[in-house]
Amino acid sequence: MAEAFENTVREFIAENFLFRADADVANSQSLLETGVMDSTGVLELIAFLEQTYGITVADSEIVPENLDSIDNVTHYLSAKLAAA
Image (cartoon, rainbow, N blue to C red):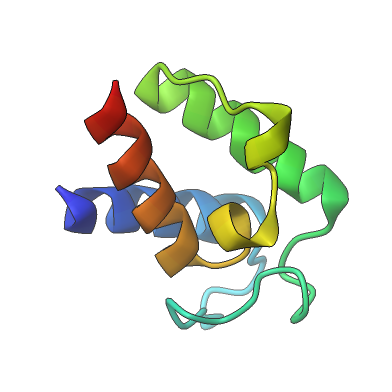
């Protein structure tokens, strides 16, 4: 399941934030520090996750540990959906 999350998140990031076909992001790479996303991008990512997976991302969950890399988002989704 985590691999499916990873692929979906990677595809969303590539389509919405990487405007070059040859651009690539490592799973552990900080999306904020590298400029792939900004604060507005984080909100777009949250809206995507909520719509795609039927979850609600609480304000307290909007932290880099959950949303700043593909790995972090994948782990966050796995934990969030397991708890549901």
